[in-house]
Length: 449
Ligand SMILES: Nc1nc2c(c(=O)[nH]1)N[C@H]1C(S)=C(S)[C@@H](COP(=O)(O)OP(=O)(O)OC[C@H]3O[C@@H](n4cnc5c(N)ncnc54)[C@H](O)[C@@H]3O)O[C@H]1N2
Ligand code: MOO
Image 1 (cartoon, rainbow, N blue to C red):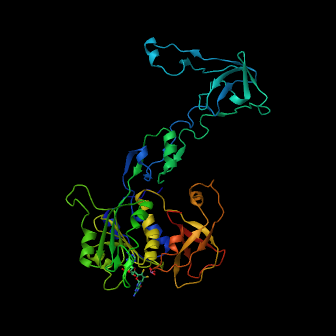
Image 2 (cartoon, rainbow, N blue to C red; image 1 turned 135 degrees about the horizontal axis):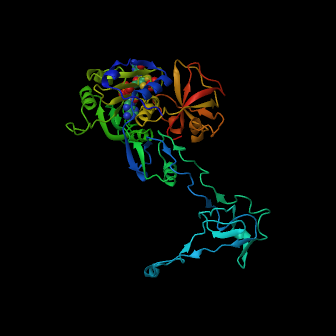
Image 3 (cartoon, rainbow, N blue to C red; image 1 turned 60 degrees about the vertical axis):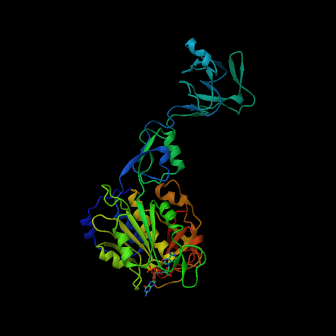
């Protein structure tokens, strides 16, 4: 985890603008730009989908006691064994009427060599027990337990069916890493280690400003108009990347409206709490035409450009800026749908990860199933990689070894096209000179890989 030092507005403004950023510069600069949001403790069940702020460590050995993995008998030494029957426990007679189960007994806490006692799965193994004999393999006769003919030869071997305390983790072991986006498996694990609350970083609040007079929100548009590719999916896409979209505004192509939306707090302007979103994502209007106003609006508002254009296609007119006085970040996505998606992955994903205190999202190396031609610039192409989260886990866990996965560059990858992207699970970084079949290139995993 990288714990970025909180920056002041002044430092922010001093940082030079990175112009025409390469794909990896864009990721690194965006990730370094934001500081982790404050952490808060939430009840375990409410932390799924949030980002863990501190490591979870084992407070006790895991499991915390030696238990039986089978119903049967705990045995000490070689058989046959004398069966130790638990003594009945003394009980307050006024309470016996309420009891529905078995008579209370005093648990057998230790066994001497040649003794055995009945045990159920998950039961606490008595001191001195050397193995558990499963119920199918033992026969009781007159207080004596023997291994029967069904048993495997040599059973029970030393330690059989005993789950030793601490076999999963020792006290102090790091069980979950900070920066992890918590999923149901993490929560199950945290629960069995005895956690009730976890420290998480809340998602940064995001406002979407969708520009474009020519954009329709439903139906099949007339020629000259386009159907909005962003409104129906960008809030969920941003959520997958760690943000929380609280507001979506459609602005048309109007400089005044855009400037107002960039500078006016979302709600509660007079509130003591800063109600502004931490990130404003705009779509369209990044270009230089008479109806593209984003750059003008940002300059008028005194915003500082952190990244000004990317040195690749599609997505080159994208920008990352910050409003003055520690104001929100502004991520300007180009209007062409695929260009917007590449810019979101290169600038938005690392920025949102940094807000959560998470590392730069990992990339994977893939080998191409077919060659890709040279082009006038680096390209980001939608790709279908034969990989899984295991390949990503490999980055964090060297024990999850994988070989280089293959990936197919997908057709229909124009800046305005969604057909290729709709089948993709990665964005392939193709060098300017192209790449041969079998050539290795970097792939940026999409958050639904
Ligand atoms: N003379 C130049 N023209 C263009 C250049 C250039 O360098 N010189 N760059 C091209 C590239 S590359 C891109 S990308 C776009 C950037 O455009 P903008 O960010 O200014 O976006 P718009 O002009 O508003 O729209 C571009 C395109 O995208 C469509 N669009 C917009 N919003 C949506 C939406 N919500 N859903 C679907 N499609 C949308 C819009 O209709 C346009 O077709 O500029 C190139 N031009
Ligand atoms: O960003 Mo444009 O979409 O590079 O082609």
